[in-house]
Image (cartoon, rainbow, N blue to C red; front, side):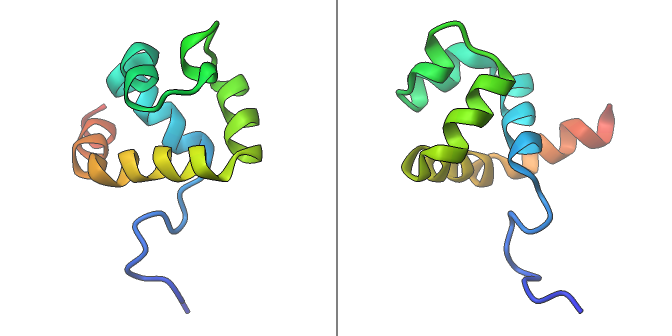
Amino acid sequence: MDHQPYNPLHGVTLKVIVTQLVDHFGFDYLGKEIKVRCFTDDPSINSSLKFLRKTPWAREKVEALYIQHKTKLDDEVDSA
């Protein structure tokens, strides 16, 4: 039984979230939207994941950006 049917993040890993955001927007845009060095100084998916897992406020901002653009991101994945 699914206990979180209306949670848009249910079943979505942080790696999927970051990867989809980077593929769609790029690190430059993410660095401007969310002011953290893991997006601006020598960015990579792995360094971003490491930072976001340790920093709840930054992770919340990334998740909020993902939720805001989820429909667009899902459409891109479906069409790929």
